[in-house]
Image 1 (cartoon, rainbow, N blue to C red):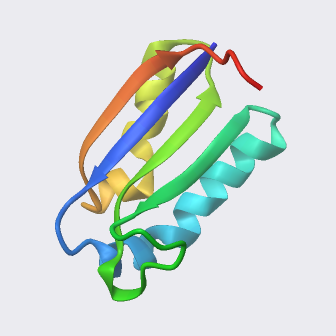
Image 2: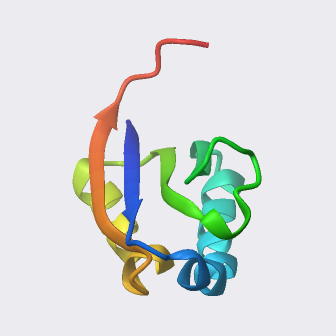
Length: 99
């Protein structure tokens, strides 16, 4: 089943985010390579594809996991969660309708 993982950043998270990014991307690439990643990306803090020093307010991931518990475990182990980039992580079942 698909699950939505929404991580909300702490204020001024950009430096922590950049430091943890390589490990975070490696985990996402592993999901992608296993055919389990639908989409993933950050939410810019300003209305721009490159927010510069404004940074990001969070990240959204939609991926396939065997269960809600396993999706939560994966999210809890993400470097953005373990290094304090995220202040809160929400994991919920997701039903793809389009496209």
